[in-house]
Length: 64
Image 1: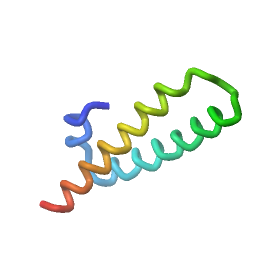
Image 2: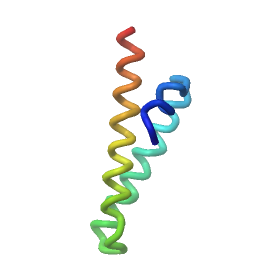
Image 3: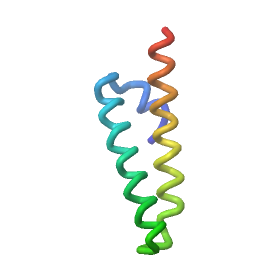
């Protein structure tokens, strides 16, 4: 997800998307730890970056 797309979203949508992504990270980490799949590393990294982008955008909107 690109930052420009995130900036256009409303606060409510950002919070909802943040919850979804954090849940997804948790599930992906669990499957990685249990050894279910080896190919989740890139998806985990990308999802964590999306979470960070959303949190950054929310903090910027709070500051203004």
